[in-house]
Image (cartoon, rainbow, N blue to C red):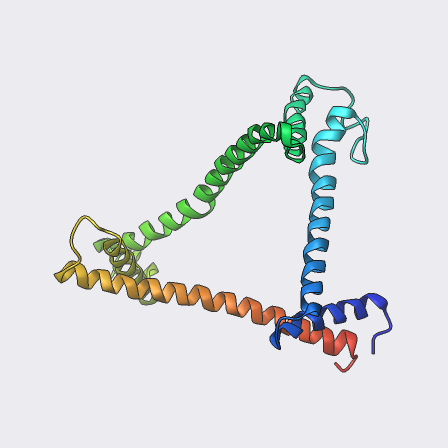
Length: 235
């Protein structure tokens, strides 16, 4: 068996978490609370060291472990602008004083607005636009000059597998769009295509759920390997 203290700590916490498979118990709640507290403390420390210190304390106060005279020889005018987010961060703690708790709403409004705008651009550039491009690319393969049955040197780059995949993709996109089209009653052809869209949605949800299950099973396998190899030394 392992002789390191932290291996024993990790093994005991793992067993406490796995005890929930029997039923809810104090050991599981203790491990859950400890995990949440340690994770939050680690995140706060990581944010303070990697964000707060190099981006605020070093350029504004010329202090801290991230400060060096070569990096910040003088205070530039833009450095003084950092006072604004610094004051907003301090205002957040006014929630602990009931009489001035309303001041924290201003900081929260700026914080939520900033991250909503930032995440909107990231989602657009990272998810919406690439997925839209893939959808348009699938439709593009159905142009006559792109079909593989047209024996041309350039069209042979599109394989039958890609063609069938694009056909299923296009049918799925159109069927799902029809399902969410509520300006017409879902009867007849529209109702049939809408039900086909439901099948495509269920398949996609099932695939996403299966991917989540695979991730959880992968974590369980890692924990079992840790208990058998690192803790018990049976590997």
